[in-house]
Length: 393
Ligand code: PLP
Ligand code: TYF
Image (cartoon, rainbow, N blue to C red):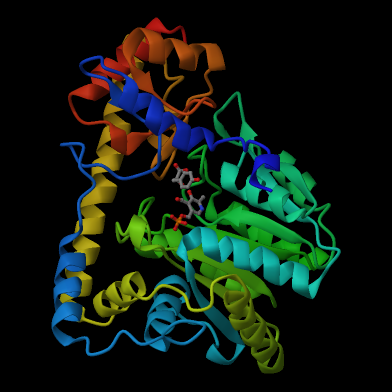
């Protein structure tokens, strides 16, 4: 049986980690996988996370199963963090295995409700979105997103394309900090997107994996909250991997905002069913860390302060890189790096130029020229800027 398996295409981002490890050159720079790293290149455990873990260790009396949908404390705390004021009687929620698990369950839920569903995704998008949909056999079409000229959003293209999504189709949107481009919609543009979806009856699935990494915890949730206020049905897949730095704990949540309380109950039942079909109970440790932090004023304040340091560090690196490139190129054509938000920026370089950065300068970024800003520090920014110019980008 097993010998009849076909080799699977590896994830290009994860493959890069192996390639980087195997490179023996001094001074190599890893701008690949989207993990936050401090100036020492370390992905730290956040202070509030350590404190919460200590508290859990001291007080937890059982590790018996949680609920199929996860603990209510976690789901309520996350609803408050992501959505603030949304009618509880319309909101179903499900603890999931990371943000990826939430996306997977959202797509399963959409197909359960509407077997003919088509998913509309940005071009480009996170490669896992595409591979999960392909694996599930879900039909999907791309909408225009990135303007290769300005390195901003092709908003006219986006509007024309998402207007083609029909009633009951899913439009997958990145709530903030678009991966892989770093280019984001303004709030006024989000309002226009909401109006298009309102008119068509297509349902937004908002992937919110970087709340707190762009303009701030509240700012990064603003578009999601506005859409939840305006539209009758919304799916939201949120991840705690980045903003709590608990990548390996696999902590995520799926929200389904329903038209009314009866539909909410149906959604809640189907969501718990989906957890049961796939893995039964969701993991609890990360969720418990998150609810411990969010429901304690002191821990929450310390976490928010550390997250703010992380965000400002990335903004500082963006500003430095844009400024160095302005000096070296004698032009403002790299200013988009300062305008992008989140961990990533797409440089808009060719695969050959990305390859040159790797072979000539031992700088690793994803083949589509996505770089992880957090892989830099004050000393490596000038090295990258020089290499970008030398590679003819
Ligand atoms: N969505 C996007 C766009 C991401 O970049 C990530 C990243 O890691 C996720 C979702 C989900 O992450 P995780 O499953 O690690 O929570
Ligand atoms: O885009 C990234 O780099 C992150 C991390 O299969 C990641 O979202 C990358 C690939 C993958 C899972 C997570």
